[in-house]
Image (cartoon, rainbow, N blue to C red; front, side, top):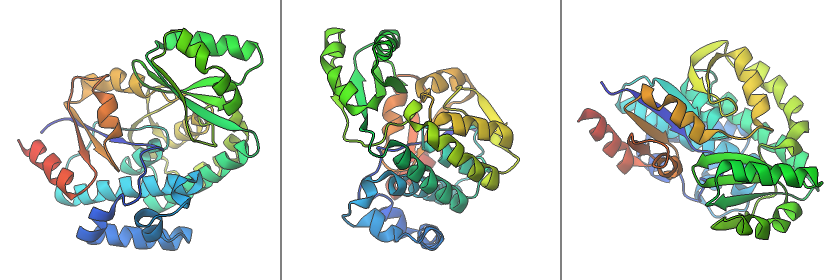
Length: 309
């Protein structure tokens, strides 16, 4: 039996229509969407399948992405039995990973990330927060520029270490916009300010940390399968560790590529659960191991076929 890791995408992977194929072809998916709608008093059929503005609002985006990832996992597990060596998520995806690890029920996780999104929005409300994608610069150069700019009074931080040569920054949108030419002069192939009103994984979210903690205490189980932390790139499997890491995750950068590289030797391949194949693309730069994905019935069947080879 192949050794696998389960991985889960985060915010930015959402699209209208995600999860529809599962919904049309799986009773499990229908039941999960029905139960999620009842738990959060959100019509997830409308949110996921019909044109709407809410899918772009983080308090709705986060539970929508998590729900589709959990459906993908549940439909897979109905058809194929395999235990992962570890689970890993990108940012929000760490909460989907916790569901896979048995750390939290998916309905509790939906409520948790709905609140997480609300707290993040509140923390950034009126503050002009934003994020920027950078291509073509090494980490050390970006970190040095950010440190120099913070010392000069600007609020900018590295937020997502996605893969070599691709970093996402967070901070005040005006400060990020003012640094586009600085990064390009330093050799960046691209410096793009993103259409976002929340600055994830930086100090602007400090107020959200304490707001989230009580719900982590309430919903998390005491022990679970190994989860790789975004904050440390190390494994954890207890409630106390989870509370510490998931609270810190709001204000600390996501060490995604570091996590893949640190634990790559433990597995033969990765399986990404959720909409699209964002992490599959990132993994190509950090691992020589294949990444399969489960985002609809077609990719589900392809992944099971590959596992059976």
